[in-house]
Amino acid sequence: MDILKIENLTKVYNGKTVLDIPKLNIEAGKITAIIGPSGAGKSTLLSLINGIEKPDTGSIFFENEEFSKIKSFSPATIRRMALVFQKPVMFNASVYNNIAYGLKIRKMDKTLIGQKLTDAASFLGLSDLLDQKAITLSGGEAGRVSVARAMVIKPDLLLMDEPTANLDPANVAIIEDMIKKATQIYQTTVVVVTHNMFQAKRLADNIVFMLNGQVVSEGCAFDIFENPLDQRTQAFITGNMIY
Amino acid sequence: MLISLDPELYGIIGLSLKVTLTALFFAALTGIPLGVVLALKRFPGRSILMNIVNSLMSIPPVVVGLVVYILLSNQTGLVGDHRLLFTPTAMIIAQFLLALPLMMGLTSTAILSIDKLVKLTAKSLGATPFQVALKVVSEARFGLYSAMIVVFGRLLSEVGAVMMVGGNIRYMTRVMTTAIALQKGMGEFQTALALGMILLLMAFLINGILEILRNYGRAS
Ligand SMILES: Nc1ncnc2c1ncn2[C@@H]1O[C@H](COP(=O)(O)OP(=O)(O)OP(=O)(O)O)[C@@H](O)[C@H]1O
Ligand SMILES: [Mg+2]
Image 1 (cartoon, rainbow over the protein chains, first blue to last red):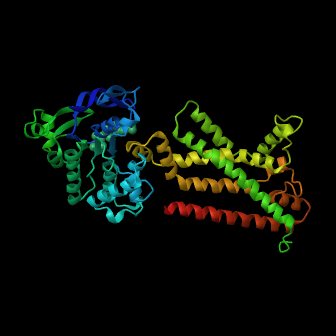
Image 2: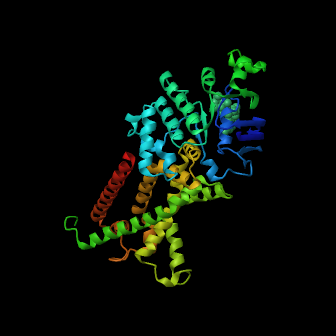
């Protein structure tokens, strides 16, 4: 089953078409990795799926609800997703209150929030930082907080834009583990943008390869990595792409 | 004169604070939400409104005083029969009108200085438009405290508007600034200077209190 169906989607910035996707489906309960060179439109695609940016033409269907230039997702649908931005932005508050934000605005019970926070923080090695002001965190710590902040919500659709870009190998492993657990235990659908081909291999069920705003190839990870039919895709994953 | 601190002086200090703080209170109550809307909402005429607000931020107090005077006066005023002219209420109204655009303008500047990604992050985590606005306001809180300090300073030191609609009536509408102007007019420079010192001291104390509030907000 597909949780997302994208049809004839385009996005134009300053007269330049940065995204042009005639058709793309995202399978529910699976991990999809979006790969592709810088400027390919990966982050733009995530912002559109999350409803933060509006498309210029075309639609995104979340289950059967349509989002387009003139139609917004309902608040309830928006609350079924969470996005981890490429650049982690900390609210000027404690680490605790940063991670708890998504739960607080959903009016979750305070004791329950406390429990979830303790769990998430110990998983991500943030337990000692909960009282620290989030704007004083190191880059990697902030990255982990922004992952935790989205994951505690337990969204049905988790969108992550290079969630491990700033992290050391140990923390990369922890976060990859959390992502896998989320799909296994909670059937979370994950769409993760990554520049790390090894990570894509380790994590993804499906791969979407983007280039110049277009989806050049997509399919199950095994096929894409072991037997890429498209020449540019092969060049990119083997690191031989010439820009 | 300073040492004897007669009851009249207490009355003047009290009225100054009452007028200025009341006007500040109502200006913050209305100006902050309006400034937030101005900064965050896209609506037709927004940039024109922003221009108007920014221009009104530097309007001379005497002009505001004049307008309120005309509105409240018996012959010409639209609301003249309430007999508000030359009362503290008239002074509060004039100072409120003086403060409102300043409060709105400084608020929207503070809000607009917050990284757009804060707004998007809140939204991406499921915040409703109102919750997004609350988050941005909370991120801009230090800017808002500063705005209040600026507006307070402008109101406390302002003489044109309170003179025009209050009339500097003894025991009734005389405040620090109009008293200073009067003493100077009578050649009592020493008294005028002493009053000026007291005014400065008041500003110092109130700013200290606001500063403590600001640090309290920062700690949380
Ligand atoms: N708000 C914007 N205004 C103008 N151009 C934009 C905007 N956002 C993105 N772009 C442009 O759209 C193109 C795609 O950007 P996007 O951020 O989606 O790329 P990306 O695939 O995420 O790249 P990276 O791997 O470097 O993060 C780029 O050329 C970028 O300059
Ligand atoms: Mg990107």
